[in-house]
Image 1 (cartoon, helix red, strand yellow):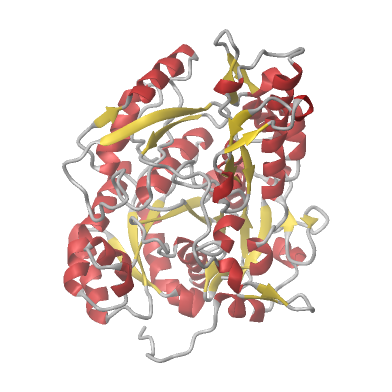
Image 2: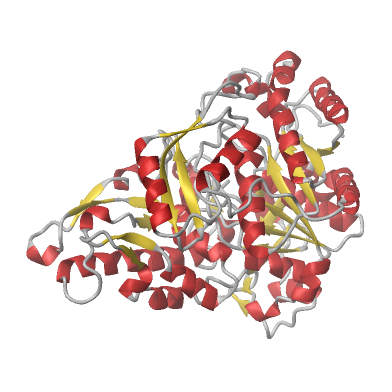
Length: 564
């Protein structure tokens, strides 16, 4: 479809506020769930009890994973594509549902904005979803900080329980806000009544291990056990201390009794949508909860879900961690691609990405090519979704389509932002074709039982394109500790920049002739994975010079403006 130049477009918020929402009881009824079963939060949101999951139907449903090429700082529209694809599937006669992560308030008030889609491919009520929603993040924050309080209480009283060495504590507090001043702090000041002084810090809530645990748990009992397995530090005689040793996990699980239930909302076109959990993909698994995915698959023939950032991060972790724990396997993988991102990987400055430049675009195709190769390694049929922006030229779009056809991968234009489901019907048809061609379960990149080094090197060489891996002294010490604790059979959750296939964010395109450097390896025994740290990873972002919060306001009638 041709976009008319000079056309005035409404903002995402204006479009969302103009939508006519259906009662959430009606949305639930559409998929056969009686209104007396759901737990409503006002008129347009509800919690879904876990006993609604139907394992037999889950096995019959088709799971579609949406990922992307290495993104620009603004992102390439995975959520918009996921929602639009769901609308498109329903428009061509398929029973489809989208299952997404919850937005974090930090990005909402920072640079990136919300995570409810965009244009006419949104989930609603947009304001509620982006601001507090049903309180899941608050509950995760409280559970995380309860453990912090119990750790410092143990250090303060020194009576009963493990004798924790405060110098070894690795557990940090969290808050769902971008606040750089909280990254490194000193606590326990104020004399004897103020506790024991020690260095501490805050992560953003989406980076909490509690978030990762929530999204990998199968039920409340599993959640409680996983939280008991959280490693917090060592005793003075170098014995590991876990949350269960502090008897913290029972109360932590109690705080999450409602947060573990998936949230039901709706799309702009009145189709059901589930939103639950939100771990970041550059430091955690970057996908919604197993429970939410299984809930969606219980009530639809097609479930569209996404994994954060590029396929080297989100898709790899979705397949090698989430699918490993859940037994799920996607029938197709959608690679979201944009003209602007490919020009960015071809060396075009961010400020000039709207200017047509086929030469820069073709130079950047190598990034798309590597991601196509990666999908092929998993043995899952792929589809390239060309997410169209109004600044894209026809020549640039044709060049991408031609490249994909030469690579032997399905490709279709995605215009969900402007036209909703009607603009994504072609993509929906290609996805159905891919699903129907799927011949079996995905192939993991590594076996969990391999040595830790071998697993890390498999990801680095096969997915990132590195020539090998170099381990710094702290990482070598961590490898010994992991073996001593008997945790070497856990999967790997790489902490790596999302801005490059490599561990250097300045290297765009398809870097070659480099080695991945692992600084240290963190233990997320509760979530059930190991976290090799590469480069300088940020777990508490800061606000920009002009944060998005400056443009957000509310009038006396409660109408919000400026949210994106």
